[in-house]
Image (tube, rainbow, N blue to C red; front, side, top):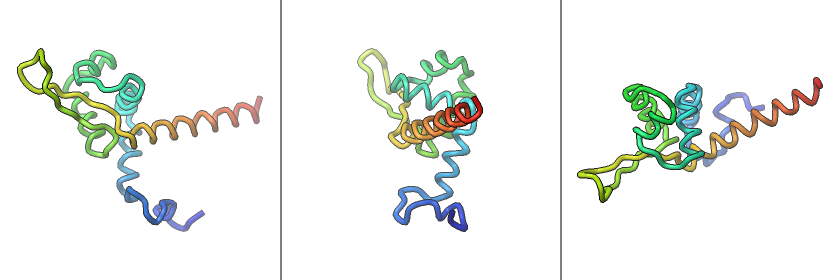
Length: 120
């Protein structure tokens, strides 16, 4: 085990240790975890669709979406919709967000299974 946690990152890491920790803090919040999970599972969604799916107030949801966008786990895309007068904004999980979610969840499930097997 390296002497410093930052030494766990590869020499040519795409993220700094601080960026990685910011992502972990973001996912440590249940609402943000649920948002990222939903976006990965269901694909791109508007804030309205997310609000309805997760039963979260609009201003609360936007706060959490902003945090996820700021750390790079979610991206906000805008596009013109033929039925709207302006831009349509939707959110989707980034590849990094999907990977972090997959590996974190997979690791937790694997460890839980090992624990269950050891004490069953």
